[in-house]
Amino acid sequence: MDRVTSKDGTSIAYERQGSGPAVILVGGGLDDGSENAPLVPELAQWFTVYNYARRGRGDSGDTLPYALEREIEDLDALVADAGGSAHLYGVSSGGALALEAAAAGTMADRIAVYEVPYCLAGNMLQRSRDYVERLGPVLAEGRRGDALELFMRFAGSSEEDIAGARSSPWWPGLEAIAHTLAYDAACMGDYRPPTARLATIKHPVLVATGGVSPDAQVGMGGLPPDFFEQAADAIATSVPRAERTTFEGQGHVADPKAVAPGLERFFNG
Image 1 (cartoon, one colour):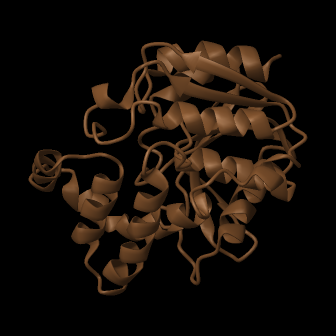
Image 2 (cartoon, one colour):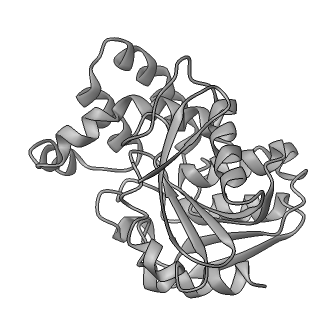
């Protein structure tokens, strides 16, 4: 485990593997880097892969007060550590963070994002507003388990899914980082694609989704079937140098072996 110090003094922990151009993996909600870990050896065939724990997660620090700008500075510090330039691959809300960083001027080369959860489909925008309105007070009261439940319902989980999660051995680990749900909400803004900022991104951007509708994904059956597709299409329409693609047969947590070849082609394009 290596570390880099962000602008505000926060220690950001990361693991590095491989050689070649740098690729930084930006995790999504409730991920301390573990979800992206299986992708590391796949991409390390071609790249130097940085898999980091976003602030407040894993072995990284968590200097308060939180602000989206601090997370962008964390990425800037990682890019500097990588030699001053890197590709970014952001998953879910981590994709929104990668796009915000690009719009803010982070020294990225190419950016790929996967299933960024902007809320355009069905009633999801209203659901996002209700979620954010309730999340703050719940976290302020220290009710981390209840915050996780709020998030799971927002993400399409059934009550049965939630009950199963609460009784699982990994629930305490999720509670430990549940406060970072507010950080992801900040990355998502008002949960609509920030079209004006996206239009300023000069980098080539790969906008990807999986080929499996959300109702076929465990714990996401309550999302509209075209939820991620509508969001991705909006991103691709807004970013001037965007390329839209689908990793066929993949759900929201994609098989690294299905993702890596597409990323290699794009990053080395």
